[in-house]
Length: 394
Image 1: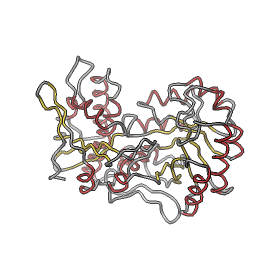
Image 2 (image 1 turned 45 degrees about the horizontal axis):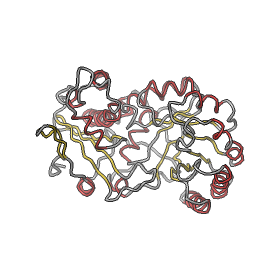
Image 3 (image 1 turned 90 degrees about the horizontal axis):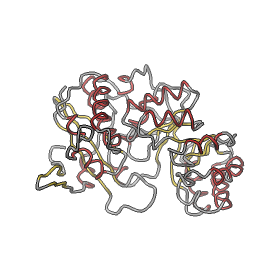
């Protein structure tokens, strides 16, 4: 198949709020070839990624992603991997490159799966897809009382695992954080899994993170996620050595396999959380999953947007039975909630299973794309490099 077109759709809700909710906008990718269509999603600033896709060449190592993609041939999984290497080489000096490519790479796997009549996980070499236990991923309440109510609601909805993150946690006093953790545990009861995301609150301050360890242990938190920025490997390692029984989690900011590998090798993390829309796509996420499994580190998907992204993020570790948790966003903005009629639902047994349909098994809703589309144009020296794609052929 020759890649004939790549269309980027910038979507956003009418008013984006200043909260840690990545589902308020999206960059949707559509690739087409020979009557087949594939869909992907970049987990990054949409406008920056669009500019990366069309930017004028600066030199041999700064070329637009578009130049390496349109016209390329994709007939087998190895073709996607080879194209990934080429795009990385020609965008070596563009940090945004991995984010932009992630959504395109995802769409290419979807395209190939649809053309071959196979789910993506089978194209990756997985013999089967094990069910995963979803954890209801949501923000901390502004107050402990709000967190308590959220925890109670999640249990009533049948979730056996719940994650609270960002919000005020790590940004006030140790006592404030302890009150939040106590409320979360009270709302969940003794038997539920509690996961905590600090949202890089302490940058690289090990003492500040360590001051919360007693409260985390008392609340029986399974992990403390992203206490630091992902580059702070020494801080991760220091905290991991003293955090037991709480494990340290991280990796969502990894932009390639090597960044994730370093967190595993030097950061001492017990859980590596990878976003297929950031790490370079589905295949690099698969590499991380296999490497983590070989090192006794548990792989977990990072997903806080749409069900298209959710399906893509589970494919890389579908066949790793011991990696049984999967992030499942439960407070999506209207854009993410409406973007696809197809879903990756929680079954009656409380488990999540990947679609058996070809590709990713999730097709975006044309009406939602039209509803949330942001009219955009990029022009340089009078030449239009990008304009919002025509939506009449959706």
